[in-house]
Amino acid sequence: QVQLVESGGGLVQAGASLRLSCVVSGRTLSNSDMGWFRQAPGKEREFVAAISWSGYTSYADSVKGRFTISRDNAKNTVNLQMNNLKPDDTGVYYCASGRRLSTTYDYWGQGTQVTVSS
Image 1: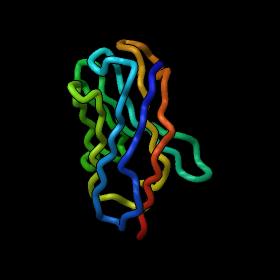
Image 2: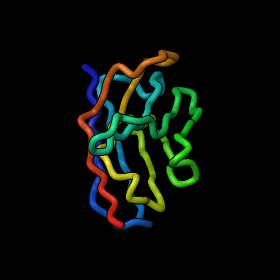
Image 3: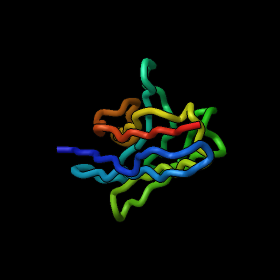
Image 4: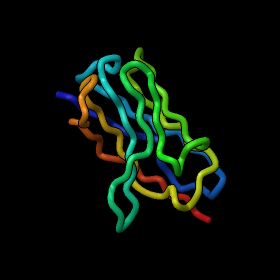
């Protein structure tokens, strides 16, 4: 069974940095497309960043230049380095996994809370 466990969230002030991690079990990361999503209170879940099985990365316009997604296949872990955080970055951050070359993510983590105060 595939499981994703996120960690690294917290309460920080605007301008600070956080590093989120997602440990994947039951699926080989090198054969997976991985993504990070977030959901703010009262809003729909939105795409943040993704990294394909081949290492190709993509970002939402709102986080480009501030967030970096990376993967450590040896540790089966995906990370999201978040710099210069803004209050609008507040939300629950979810890690997602999809089969290589699939168009959908079929497994999701429970989420980790990120709160950025002004």
